[in-house]
Length: 168
Image (cartoon, rainbow, N blue to C red; front, side, top):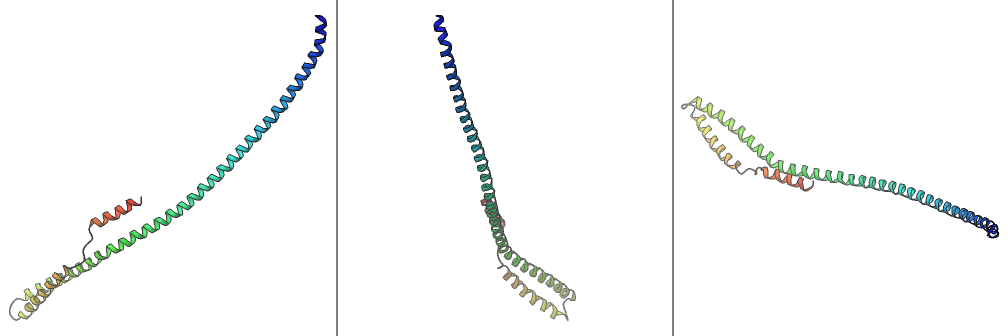
């Protein structure tokens, strides 16, 4: 058995040498794979970083475009509200002018009537007669002013609020 053991060290040495060479080869192969993994990791990180930058830029561009569109839409809606306001205020202004004219006319009539009555009946019948005639014409004018423009009610204001809610 000793003879077989003597041969064995040479074989064992040969096997050990082959095992070392195989381990070295395996280590080189694993080293290459490790380098490949490191390169793949680097590429993934670089690609992810580039993708993040592209996404951020894209969304910033979208925000800019959307912001412009929203600003333009706001201007348009504000102009529409201004137009509606002007169109609905005009009849109110017209009505106010008529009412103010009526108030002024009524004040003048009251003054003239008081003066005519203070002067009393007699020689000044002419003043009383003139006042009465004028008052009847003014009464006719007052009836004519009842044909004044319609005053916009709160229902139109509610309509503006509904329009506003539609765009919000």
